Image (cartoon, rainbow, N blue to C red; front, side, top):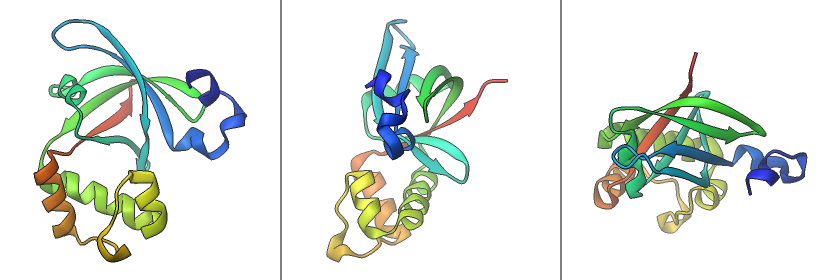
Length: 137
C-alpha cells in the first residue's frame, strides 16, 4: 500500500488514503497503517473510533504519507463531540450524500444528508474522534 500511494497509479486514491506511522505513547512501539484521509478546509484529518487515537491525546509526531509525499506532522486529538460532529458534517456536505457515504464508510438514513444533530448523536454513541495533522516547521 505504501509503495502504491507514492505512485501515480493510485490516481485519486492518493488523496483519499494516507499511511500514518507513529510511536506508541506508552510503549514506544512503532505503528504504521493505512487509513482514510479527510481534507477539510485545507487541513488533513483522521476520523475514527479506534483505540490508537489515544496516542495523540497530548499531541504527537507522525510521519504521514499523503498524496505521494511523506511529511512529518503533529497530530492533535479532538474529542469534543460538537467539534468532531461538525468535522463529519462539513466533510459529508463537501462530498454530497453518495460520495460521503462511500468515502466515510457510513450509511445515511433515507439517503439524505444527516443534520448536525444526527452527526452529534453518532459521534457520542460511537465514541468518534478526530485527529488534525499539521506539518512540523
